[in-house]
Image (cartoon, rainbow, N blue to C red; front, side, top):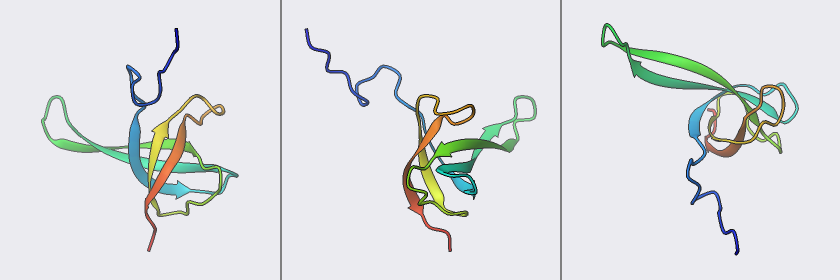
Length: 92
């Protein structure tokens, strides 16, 4: 019996987020701010929530201000659970 499971056919696919690089001071690590718009449960007003994600950047290619796409991965350190997939837009 051969096991042919891969990333696309897994039952719970890995999360993908898009955000702005806030810090790249660490070696091979980025801090990415991801904004999400949610409706307030009581007041029904749209609220922006910001989450900081620690992202693994193997080649140190992303700079502050870049818009990047990140993908969920196994724990890489105490805080890092995401890895850089692509740089969507460079900072101007």
